[in-house]
Image (cartoon, rainbow, N blue to C red; front, side):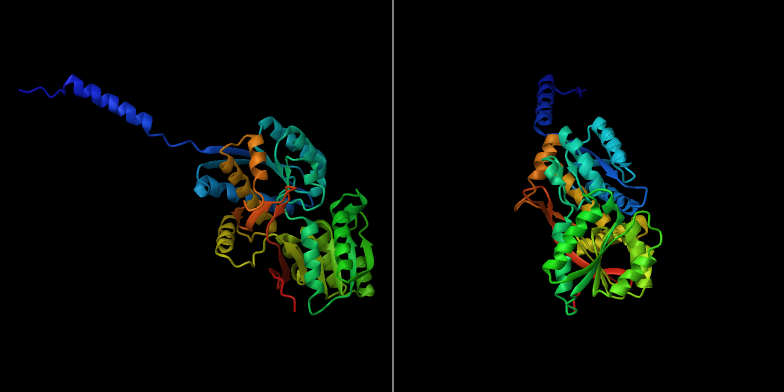
Length: 387
């Protein structure tokens, strides 16, 4: 009977060959893990922005971890800053200790102007996903602002309204009460941009109304506007005041168009103001009325996940999370320095294809993407069609 054992020489050669093959064929590379932090306003009068951004961020992370960007896994820890500088500073402290690769937020521009210098000093990239006021990226080279600025958006909105068939020649400008708090407040800074845009387009601001602090009854402002009888009303205010202002204007009988600053892009404006929001015109980085395959898929998935329509803040939070993940993939590193380098490299003809369209940063690290102008019609955001 023959032995079933192979000759020793054959076994030795086979073993050696297996070892060579094992060395020659690389194992599947482990995914790059990107840990980021998000400082968002989840409570308080401006929570609508932060809550919406968080939904968009979380949805993007879920898709990325399911393979949307091969080779990248992502985790985003969110901390509520309550819309305050101390809250954001405390959140930054948490993420500094965690040694995150980058920070998304804070939600409010006025807060970001105060705390972003800490991130820049620590050399941790911070992305202002909803900051639209000037002065953000001037803080330093580790500060990026993917969100479109009011300086880019408001002039385009005013021009579109000014050149419509209505050709309005007069306006009342209403400025939110936070303008009385600091000179770099959201309402004060946006109102300066809005006012200049009105002037540049031949629209005379016949009256400027500053909302008194702690206002609870806006009916007198509505009556004042109606008495002034402007062709249009322009408002720069945060939602806590923007919503009752719109309601008061309509209740007083003002039926003209209302131009709102970026803060009016929230779906919560329509939900709260209801029919009074009809005729509101705002500029945006994203509109639910934009007809593309990608946009339809996003809206469908978002509604399935959250049982609500997305707004600009959800869409931009979603898109900018993809930009952050793509930067990590481009540099094959999640170190803070590598992330800064790769984010800065998304410029010129090097862009990221996103839900918003082609996205890139300009030379000053401000976001560049298409601008849409939308109007609320029948309590839905629609693409503005000047007549």
